[in-house]
Image (cartoon, rainbow, N blue to C red; front, side):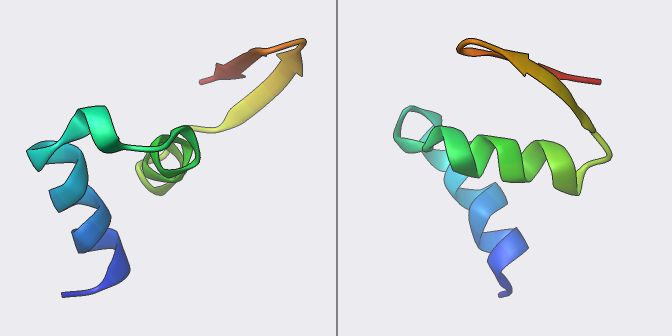
Length: 45
């Protein structure tokens, strides 16, 4: 099992333990693009 599959498994099994950086990794791996950040608000499209 590669890192991408392990991360997906973690997200499915215990999403409450998913770190924000891991969530952003999942977004980028699935075609979402980071647009901009203003303060603590990060916009993904």
